[in-house]
Length: 484
Image (cartoon, rainbow, N blue to C red; front, side, top):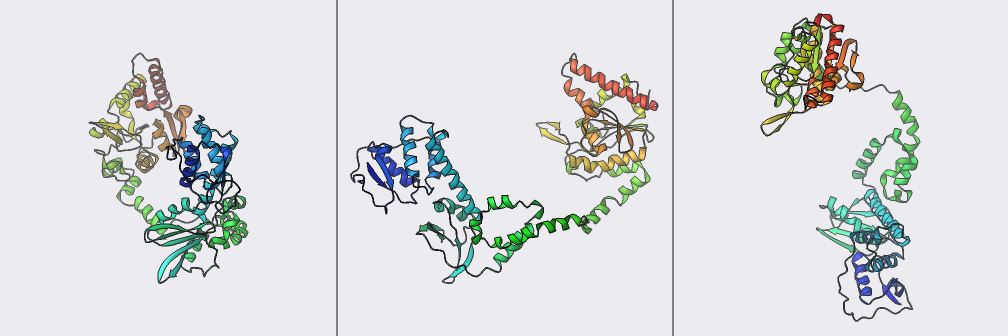
């Protein structure tokens, strides 16, 4: 048996070189013992002369390389022996060994990997720099006490984020120095007495920490699990935590007793702008013609930028029924009139079969501009989102207020959402519906019937079209004035 000397902070490169030398000599795990250079050993060291093949290339699965990279940083004395044992078995044919968590040695190495990664995360989260002047030059120093040999692994995180400042990270396991764009590592350091707090940086950080603390979300046990007490001495904000925890209950009670915040004056001015002027006067006067004219310059949502024009509603001023669709399509956008495309033509045919007169109805859409995405020379319909529906609801409510119909019919989910001010399941609530005091009716949009009518003889298309006609017939029974 031979003694292999590796320092406590040996990285994966040092372990790889030692393992390659042992494998070249054919030494099994039972033939080697990994010891510290400072540890006296009765075992002989490896011969100085290199055997044939000592520089051989060793190919290992990536799963083992990843496991070795983390586990080698652990502080456990048996980590090198475990890694060499697993490596030996992999080279003997157990290629998937590093992924086999049921193996005791692999399971132990996986535990080491988890502990190392957790230690790195804690260093990234809890290390705090303080500015000091050294020979007239600003240097930021920090003290941290890691559980494992993670300094070389964790420091690049700070280099990437604080490239323009020189800093020193001192730990009992080594020192990292970033100066003049160069990173170097030195010997372990002893902790010095804490210096005076930085009134500017510490003050800003403590103010931020105090104002972002939410007492209603306080979970003391979870906080201690994620911020162990062992790290508190290095973090200035921990001095505030006991007091904030003690006052959390009273603060929550005070928050519950407070009145709701009032909107700012800026919000009031925006609201006044939306509800005053010529457009608001048109609503008050109930003039469809004025609303139609003003809607041509509507910029309440971004859809106006790409649409050809505003497509307002169409029909008699005293219509007994208002039909509301989703939005104008390609042909409606070009013509400036609602329901003139394929869906509108199908709608006209269904109205005729239900013995209803379209000329007596008012037809409009929840959204007045065509929303689409270009595909070559075609413009493909794109469903409007909730914000666009909400922005255009003002026009729709103005139309309904001016006409005062006996019934409002929502054609499809978007129209139902605009009228109900919430998402509506058309298939579940199909039929008569109360839109906040307004007598209504919910059915499908004619475009739905077009999408499923791939074959004139298709049973589903025939059944759904028949159901739509029956809905229209029921509407005629509810409002006889619409019958032809």
